[in-house]
Image 1 (cartoon, rainbow, N blue to C red):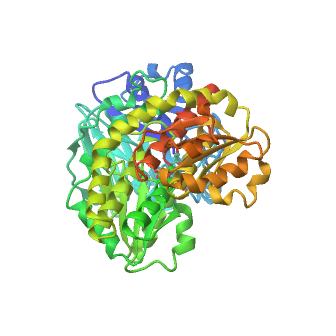
Image 2: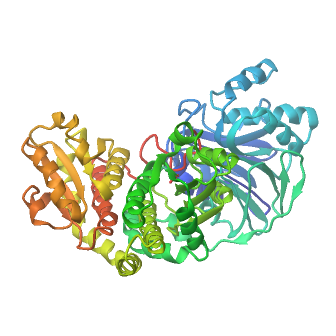
Length: 608
Ligand code: M6R
């Protein structure tokens, strides 16, 4: 949520150009408002407005802004409505310094009142403005930006990162207090950003910043200080080998479609990203654990739901999937020594998950995690993590990272089952071989055989404001995930449910032509037939994803059956999310919705 990018250079005087190029890559983090501040001719120039990055950038001619340093901010609104006034960056009272933040200042209202009483002109209802006044207050007393920021941070409560600059020097200052922050060190210029891909147009020399640190960027160097006592910190940069093309659509109309197609390769790169001895350490921790909890949010949570079925079926391990925001109140008191918590997160920044980590660390609980963004907060806080190796996921709806998470769970459960002898060695070998070698081609085939049907269903499904996606056993999480995708990008209330629960109430909604999507693992077909029959005899139009099966054919018309290639009970659920992703994608574009940036959503949610 929210993205900040700031740069200081001694080789550019047209800083607007690079600010636009880099900040545009942060679009996925917020598209309620956009703002850019630059320093030129001894004053701060500020342009900002409500709207998406590309619209505002053109309207305000952001790329024409002059100067050799500047800050850009893309906002996902929490405190203060999306409006020009609440857009960031914000200026201080006498307009000689400005700042922009990402995250939340939770004591924003009392501070707003306090600073106003102290004579500050607080113009907006946005908590980011409070960062500027906190710095200004102490700058006016001390005349030193570093000390002012350190003291100002003492006033601020919450999880945040901000970038600030004063018109009278050539520096940019940034702090990390719970939200992500990366620094880039280029030739005659340095920059700081909420994420790494946005830095790549400037440099590949990256410095990770940790919580509680203040960075002072000059064009030629970067200094890190501890906020608490000002102590300097030495850290070496590393060279990022990330592919800059990840932030380009590569011929696809949307990142979402590109990333759906990338699942062919990301299910392969996953296996080169995970390494020994970490895989074995992960498995051992799971086998030895008193209780195993999977903690995640959104799509990552749905992957853990599928994962817990794999662990039950393949390893006889009861893994309890828990929604990040729910964990502390549901298990916070009972969790303790011997329990293992596995956090799953694409971004590694999701606040609801990070809160669980903080509580568990106090209680001596081992934290393992599965993360896509390396260098993220979760990778720093975990005892052990496995990377997903999916590359950057730009589109707000998660697709390829969900599939990698589920694939990794199937793999880990098989290894755990092999080790504990819960499954036969031959069966384990066959499944590992399928996951590592057959899966990419099966995904490719699934995309090519189900795309047309998914697209053809769009006009019919678009007529409904609500419908159901039902799964059973291993496909329960698949149904939840398919329903979330449709809600998120099509603005349709698609409810994901366990299919046997449907008769306990929701069945009354069914009438002639009402759509119900089923996702069915091969061995469950006979069992699910009951559920199909229940809704079919009441007039529902059944749409299904699954392996071809004569029983299913009786209830599902040819055009409504999105058949996945024959694989196995454990591979099929991985494939079955793909037609659901494609339905969501084509339904969104049919409704003229940009699926990459659904309204009100941000890809990285660093607020509680
Ligand atoms: O970065 P995370 O995996 O922790 O994010 C969790 C959710 O916010 C995320 O999966 C969200 O539900 C997706 N936008 C859904 O497509």
